[in-house]
Length: 158
Image 1: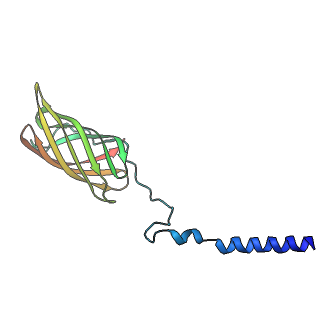
Image 2 (image 1 turned 45 degrees about the horizontal axis):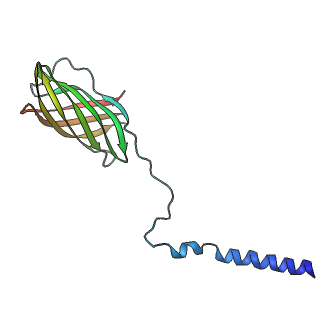
Image 3 (image 1 turned 135 degrees about the vertical axis):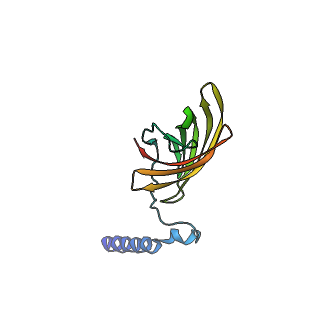
């Protein structure tokens, strides 16, 4: 008789625990996510550089662009910026960009432009676009020392 009572009690407990299965979802907000999977975000950390440029197509263009991405939070990334421009001008500063989708990367850079012994501020904005999986075509426009600069360059991760 004792074995029969234990078996019935065990079966009753098993049935009761099975009946409660899934009740924890009853009290969740209908807007809360039940999907525990996460989407991966592309890493932009590292050095992205353009080809070495010796001559510039226009007096307002730059080349030898480099993004040294040192920080990334989600789709926003930032780091050091450098480029050289026509007439012996160099740009050094910081950049910030946001990879808003798979094809568009709005970005901005600012810092100091140096030409000889003269230093002054520069500011660039633009949009990057992926070309393949490792190249970004970077379009830019802005000013350095009050003069306009603009162009396009392809950078790739080093």
